[in-house]
Image (cartoon, rainbow, N blue to C red; front, side):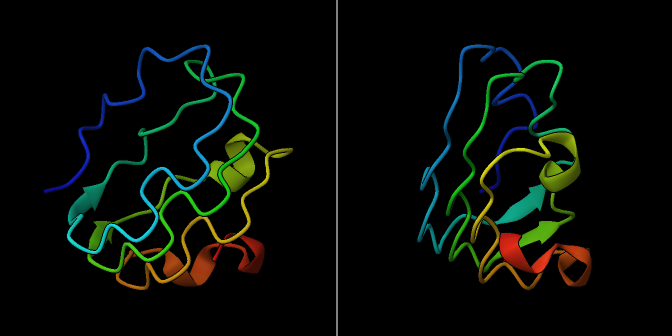
Length: 94
């Protein structure tokens, strides 16, 4: 299944989601635009490869590149071409 939209709602100390779901080919369902919010996750600086290879995800990728402008987002959404906003994700993030 997908990810609960509240999964990262109470993780204020979280700094890194690097490779958290990389290669989770069976992870499907819609990503929530509110999966990560800066107000609840102000310390995240690394989204490297977080969803890389999660090709079954749908919905819209949360705009992490604008919410967390200084974070490393290299390949965060690589291979997630079923996301509705995939074409608008900055190249560095896919």
